[in-house]
Length: 280
Image (cartoon, rainbow, N blue to C red; front, side, top):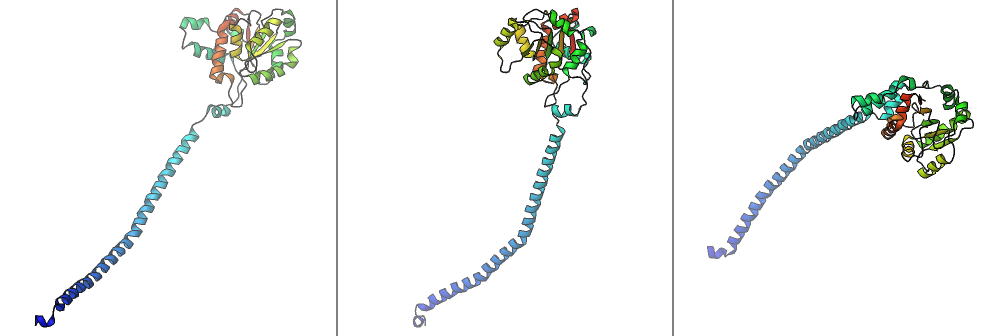
């Protein structure tokens, strides 16, 4: 019987069995694929929701941090902000004394500090913020014309006006027009003017008024081109504020040079009654 069927019956049976297995497997694979797809479809909204929540949380956190940084930036005020919000007030002898004490207190003994105290008698009337420079000087130096004519000493000045910058020096010199009369005025600052040129001008003739920055004045005194023997008045541009709302004593470099200038012999001359100080 086997011989009658030949070899093909076995092959046909085998192929049929494989075909049946494949046919049976296909629905299962298809069903599995559909199940996975369905599962992914179900999971997709949840995953999207989680991602969305994470993004919102991250965005919210970043927003909160940015708000905190913004608040910190707003709270941090510059010296310009602080000074701009403060009411203008005229300077006083107590302020100058306090400044000198704060500087000397860190480096000098108690006895040395006492030797550097400015007496009340050395101060002129302070500017009450109502004066121009000329009107102020006319008030505190009423005998200027007579004093000016008696001055004949070269390399020295009768009136020394100290301010914080070269630009301010130019402004103050312009304001001196109605006060100075025939007095010779010299610019004493560093910008565009060499020390040698200023030394030459000081030694060449009689200078009545010097207007400039404490740094350059210190250099001229150190080089013995400017002497203090004839000095009668020291006027400090105390109340003026620059574009950043700073007074000259709010600038560390200027303050340091000013204190050095006071130590060159001006404090001693004030104590002797030879020099008067005005806070303009």
